Figure 1 (tube, rainbow over the protein chains, first blue to last red):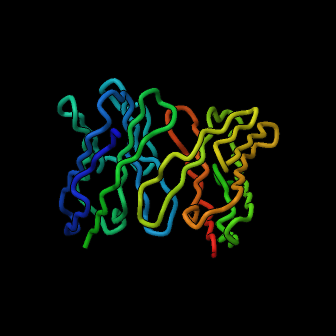
Figure 2: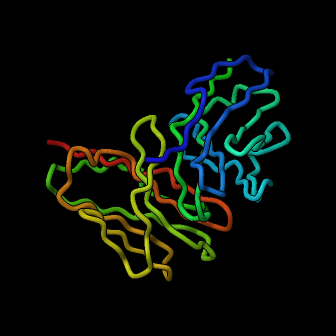
Length: 112
Length: 108
């Protein structure tokens, strides 16, 4: 069964450092998303990406965040200067038609 | 008002029983509706889409009431493996909006 894969599964970084979270969406999907879930809280939308550009972003997705699709398979989320409050599980998701989305297993980011 | 609201539970359900719970959404322009399931520290997984006419998938039945802006999920003949957090998800424009989830605990 096709799946969304994310690496690494767990990333520990020092406050102020840059991190890049990587995702390989399902191959025939056209819509890509990043979500995050702070421990014990709900899943929050960060950004959606379609046709090689951001289609929508939330207020969480400020100038510290960026996304890229550097080649035909990878979809990355970069956080330029991490803060303690960025600690969360980050989920990548993809969709073939922009309806329901399949989620990757997540990257647990811990900022210390 | 929260965009998607759910009763957090937990709903403690004896094995074999039926459990039902709702979710409400605030934006009448919402386009599509889903139930996802999330196990502890795992990713959300699509359980089922929710259609206006109501739909069933095995032991799971989902209903949508657009007039009252709520969605429901009913689980019949609960199994131990149904223990999870059930996420109500609403699609508005280009994004999925998640409720905080309803925890269901099925007990032997």
